[in-house]
Amino acid sequence: MRKYAARVAGAKAVYTFENIMGESRPLREAIRLARVASQGDATTLLLGESGTGKELFAQAIHNAGNRRKGPFVVVNCGALPRNLVQSELFGYVAGAFSGALKEGSPGKFELADGGSIFLDEIGEMPLEAQVSLLRLLQESEVTRLGGKEAKHIDVRIIAATNKDLPTAVRNNAFRSDLYYRLNVLTIQIPPLRQRDDDVQLLTRLFMDKFRKSLGKPELEMSREALAALAAHHWPGNVRELENCIERLVNVACDGRIDITDLPQDVMADMIRGRQQKPGEAAMSLKRIQKALILGTLRETGGNFRRTSSLLNISRTTLYAKLKQYGITADTFRAG
Image (cartoon, rainbow, N blue to C red):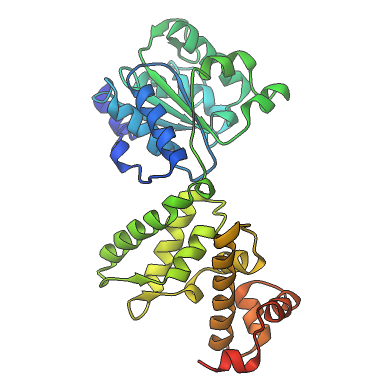
């Protein structure tokens, strides 16, 4: 069954805690709790926004525990067709439904027997499947769709969501009894905007990764560009940052990435001053904004329409910033 699980379910965990990069306090606390979770079999609930690395944590927990030699099965609960959820998760017997295999088929939980199952987007699981999952958690047994015989299952459950499950419970979109069963060990994975110290570290790691994969020579990123990346909101978290750096490395010329090379949404955040920074950080942000505006004006030959378009801001906002920083035609044409 284990070889079948690996072939059918892609049941392999390749990442460990050493693959989780970052030194910020919120991340280190999440890793500490995950290491604690890995030493037992308690059901673990990972909470975090999209792109924060929930599956990376799940794999690390599996590989650090005593089930590391068993299968690691991933289920995206939000991607399963509603009419196939029960059969995909819990299997089915011969003749259970039209089109069923003659010999029946094991579900994801059977395939994970002896190992771990990662239920991603658990908040998207239909209510009828939640009932079956609750029974499995309570009795460690699974009954295939259309069958009568219950089979004992030894599996460690790691679930993850970016939803507010207590609110879903109040709205009758998620079973309260299942929520309490899942909420044994809860680990909050911080979004990248709460990991300011890690953005520059991850940026350099991703630059080196993509530079090597493309066979490019050493790349340098200006201090202003690094500071702008650190100040960005990153709604897509680490995944968004990685994609951003991949693009920058692909289009980089002359071995350097400058602030004017950054994506429009990053530049627009800088100009609009969305990231409110105190004291010295605020002064640094203003210097970066001014440098970005000047660099873009020089790039466009002083064309205000193109400059505002590149910066993804209105011309009214651009004029206000020019006045705020005392930028005149002589200023941006000078150098």
